Length: 190
Image (cartoon, rainbow, N blue to C red; front, side, top):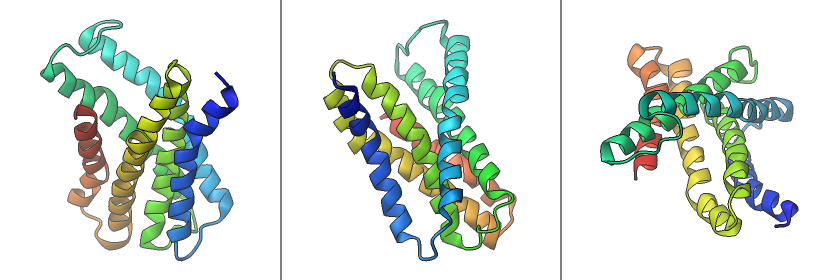
């Protein structure tokens, strides 16, 4: 296994999607703020992994895997989707709370995508590097998992911007987290 090829295969999907959303931004954000958002996405990986292992152990026992559809549903929504999207929201809030460049609707999406793909890139490295069939894992994750995190981030960024710029309501505030969690949970369940 050539570690350089493995890293390229793991990181390239996230990099390409980052470049895509950056190119779509009509008023480019400062690179330093985008890097900060990506690094927050990277930084939350370890606490998320620890939390997910803890929740999984509490619900199913140490090292246990889901055994039926109910277990799979619980795992999809409460072990994976809720912790990951909650920490991504925390990271997004940390990036945007005092960001003077957060001044238009699309910015919420851009920064959320940076956080989400920072997380997805590191998660992808762990999945790809630990499998002997790393190429097939990399291809599968490039087509499904990384674009999934991209889509969940778009949902979060959209509702974050709606809450910030349009309607400061509890219903919209709830959507900032619940919509990406629902999408992520359904994706993981399927």
